[in-house]
Image 1 (cartoon, rainbow, N blue to C red):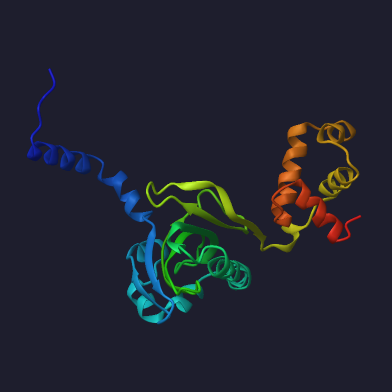
Image 2 (cartoon, rainbow, N blue to C red; image 1 turned 120 degrees about the vertical axis):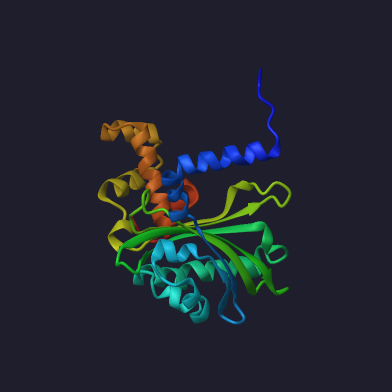
Length: 251
């Protein structure tokens, strides 16, 4: 027969579990995301959580008083340059032309590398929304979370996405409004000899199966090469990839 719990017993049981797993639970404190509200008019954070102190070793109060430029100074130079010249301009274009009617229904995602106070290079993924904009789409206030993803990502590739979120369910649409890849190490963004070979035959009208037979490799390998080429060129599909090759005089 199951035991009936009143409110006090449930609380006592929860406390007992917390005490039992105290060391394990400390992990969640050390990996909690950084939460912030940012005011574009004053160029200052309205709120920034103390998890920044834990994750990066910098004072959240100091950054609150110093503004976003202080936080940006911790980013690796290539990452900051990509954000300033590619990510934010794209965000601004989308805000002012595509989604200015209701920006709160869109989630933006960007990853970047930065140095902790201890000198360690960490990779963060930031999810954010522009919760208040002017009627023209100019951002006024953003809300976001930044997560340490160093355990699962250490390369320099920056991924920048924009997705619509259903305001009733909070779930995002499967389709991306934007999904761009920025290769901060220039060599990583170049098409390899094998990729160029596959692209050339694709331009000549050969199907993936025919190319696989010519190269004695699997269809899956062909598809992976094409996926990598689309990422490197920010093309959504094979048609865009072929147009890109023609436009840039690859052959």
